[in-house]
Image (tube, rainbow, N blue to C red):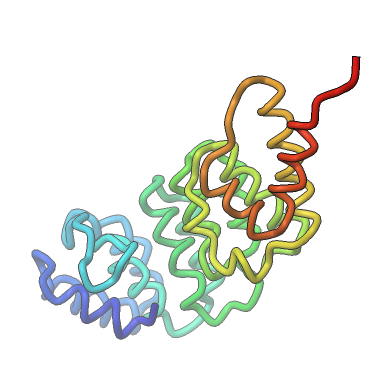
Length: 210
């Protein structure tokens, strides 16, 4: 996703003039983002954008406001996240890959992944999650399985999934099998792709001798 695509997708928002004025104001005076950011949902709506799959109008508008900042993107992103409601936090998380901040936003990912808000967890595992270290990333994937977040939201899943993640998922599958519970289909599919699912299933189904 790029700012240009988000801007194009927002052409039909209820109040496009407000967004244009807000973007100019934020570029001229970065402090005004603290006022415009919370208002974006009310002024631009919450509709799902057909031209920006996975984004809503309020999220796209807020991301554009962040990209319009002339500087200190990381500081403003953190302040808006810490002070924001759940929708504003999601917008910040989804905007992180568009900002020139390197890995400075990783603490926000850790915070989101610790919550019980599945939509925050999903937003944290988008493209910016490439900055998570392998151990933290694996734990985040496991949290998706535990909480029912579809693994389809995890960016670069097949590229980053490794034998350690496979072992963790296989152990979880064995625990659930022993408890008479099933694994989500997407987690089972991932295990199969990693070559661990069939081996784990064979081991569980082998009868023990009396």
